[in-house]
Image (cartoon, rainbow, N blue to C red; front, side):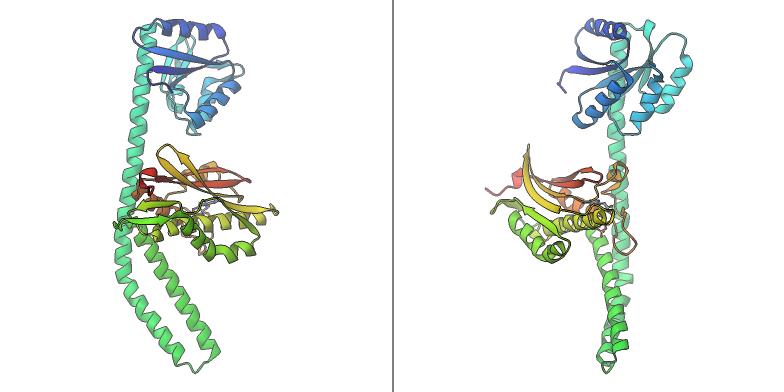
Length: 382
Ligand SMILES: Nc1ncnc2c1ncn2[C@@H]1O[C@H](COP(=O)(O)OP(=O)(O)OP(=O)(O)O)[C@@H](O)[C@H]1O
Ligand SMILES: [Mg+2]
């Protein structure tokens, strides 16, 4: 989108309406508009979908009458898909009831075609864009506050759990080991005690993950991080399991790629391990769903503006649009109880965020997923 030209999408099956809007907007002094015409319901939907990926428009006009369907139908369809643009509905004279319906489904405004003047149009567009920006900022802020609150309560809960449950657990674990050592090698007792110790370790790990999530990466000693080494460490750890599942590993990260970070390499190690374990699970599920055949996990690096992007791509199940929205929320998991806590990605995000980076994700169901870890280039070791 250009800085000072306002990009306007017009979804209207009547070319005369489009020409009229163009004429009015051409008369506005001090502001340029560039108009794009989508002459049908389907073409409009296509344009809005492209906008979702490429952020092409600042505002969109939708005619109420679009063949056998209406602008309201289109609004209902696109608003549920998180398409970020203010939409102004255009109607003919005498359709005031449409006004209420438009508001209900989330239109930014409503204009009656034959009452349009260049003054009214310019003002409506300006207000719609302004209100929309404010709304987006407000939503982001709310989400941030919600997440911070949630993390703060998790932190509190985790530290009190660490103390209140951690201490008795330590005692139980010690006693279980004592009984094992004095069981005169009775296999039944030994087996039970091993189960007790393993379950206690699972609870301790969960408490530890909660503490980590609330903390992010707080180690502030600056260190050098060898990306290629972290990847090969993770592959050493997971190699056996990946091979067992017939997963091909492609690693294109060049040797010697080094970053300065404020944390130790354990943190990036943790992030990558989370991603690789998730990819492994997604591939296992894809195989179970009948997509056997060649599967892979692919590591590569891209450069995007001020970020070095470390990509982990897999050929697993992919992620639905609905789940994509919740991916980084603490405790979001689609795995069975006991196999996933839903803290992996939330913790990874917190760690990368504390370095000034972020994690993005692209996914297609039944094809696979790419997780992109954006690391600030200012951290690249010279
Ligand atoms: N590569 C992937 N392919 C498909 N789905 C994925 C992938 N990575 C994550 N997911 C989805 O995101 C959810 C959340 O992942 P996350 O790592 O946060 O938690 P988890 O793996 O369920 O549990 P854990 O806390 O053990 O990591 C997963 O349950 C899964 O549904
Ligand atoms: Mg996980």
